[in-house]
Amino acid sequence: MTQSASTTSKIFFWVLMIAAQVGAFFIFKDLADISQWVVQSSREFTMFIWFNRWPIAIATLIALFTSVFIWFKNRNLLPKWGIITLVVFCMFNWYSGMFNTILMFRPQQFEGQATFVSVNDAPRYLEQMKHAAYEKSEFDSVDEIEMLVLETDGGARAYADYYLLQPHIVDGGQINGERVVMTYCGLTNMGIAYTPEINGKPLKLRVMTQLRNNLVMWDTNSGEPIQQFWGTAESQGQQSQRMKEWPTLRMPFSSFKELYPDGEVYINNIEQQSDNFLVRFWDTIVRDGMMLLAVRSLQWQSDEPAFPTIDEFDDRLPVKKMVYGMNVGDDYVAYTKDFVVSKGGLLNVKIGGSDIAIYYDAQYDSLVAFYNESGQAITQVNIFGSSNAGVLKRLDTLKSRIFWFIWRDFYKDTDVNRV
Image (tube, rainbow, N blue to C red):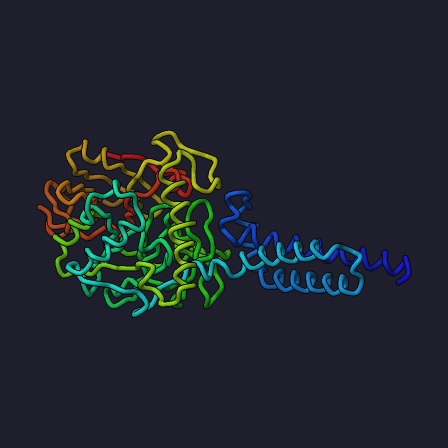
C-alpha cells in the first residue's frame, strides 16, 4: 500500500471510529440511566436521542464495522489489542443504551404475568423478601413491611416496595371495569395506579430510564415516553391528555391483613421468576445489587440524591423528608405525617377549589385523603371514608410517603402543610 493510500485509510478509520464512539456515547449517556451518576443531559436532549435512537444506533454500527473493515485491510493502523478495546467499549455503550434496560426491567403489566397470594399465604414469601432485601434490624417482623394498597373490583391488592423494584410496572387488576397498572419508582418511593390508556389508545408500557430521580416509561405501541409523575405522552401537542389515576394508600402489612382479610398480596421473589440459573443470577445483580444500591443505600441513607440530577432544593422541609403529595387540578400541596398528627389527625382544607378531608389513622399507620362534597366540615372519618357526612370518595391523586425534594422538583409551586 502506498503512503498516500495508507494516510487516506488512517483518516477514514479514525473519522469512522470516532463517529461510532460518539454515537454510542450519546446512546449510553441518555438512554442508560446508570450513566446519570456521572453525566446528565437536559430533558430535551434526552428526548431527541430517544426519538432518533434507531438512526443513531444504525449509523453507529455502520461506522464501527466499516472502521473495523478498514483495519483488517491495513492492520498497522492500530495494534490488535487497541481495536478490540475500542470495539468492546463502543458495543458496551451501544448495548447499554439500546437493550440493557429492557432486560433489566421486565414489566408484568398484563393479567397473568404477576403473581398474587392470599394474606394468609403471604407471610412466608415476605419472610424470604425480608431476609433478601433488608437489614435484619429494619423490620422485626413481616407485619411491619410497608405496603402500597390498591382497592380493585376484585378486592384490595397490596404491593411491597422491594417486589415492585425490578419490574416497575405490574398488573393492578380492574377498577370499575377498567384495566389498571401499578407503576412504581424506587428512587421517588412512589407508586401510582393508572389506566394504561391515553386518548382512548391502550398503552403497552416498558421502562425507559429515569429523569430527575423519577421513572420514565415508554409505550411500545406509539414509542412515546411517559414520565411517571405526569402520566402524559412526552411529545408536544400530546401533553394535555393524561392516563387516569386511581387512589392508592400506604400501610404496614399488619394493617392490610386486618382491614382487607380477603385481599391479595403481590409476590416477586427472584427464585419465583425463572428456573434458569442465568436469569436468576442476572436478576440478583439487578435487584439486589444495582437497585438496592441506588435505592436503599444511596437514596435512603445519603443526604444527597442517588442520581445528581437535581440541584435546586427547597428548605421548607428537609431534603429527604417523606411527604404525602396531592393535587386538585394545578393546585399542589405536600403534607408531612407529623404536621397532620399535630393538628389532631384530621384536616379540612381546600385544594384546587375543592373541599378535602385529610386523615391520619394512628391505629393503622396510614394517611388518607377524601373529597368532601357534603358542604359541612368533617369531624369524624375512618380509613374507608365513612364520616359524619356520609361516605367520602378517595382523592385519586394522593402519593404517599415520597421524597420531598423530588415532589418539589416536579411541582415547584407546591404548598406545604396547608391548613
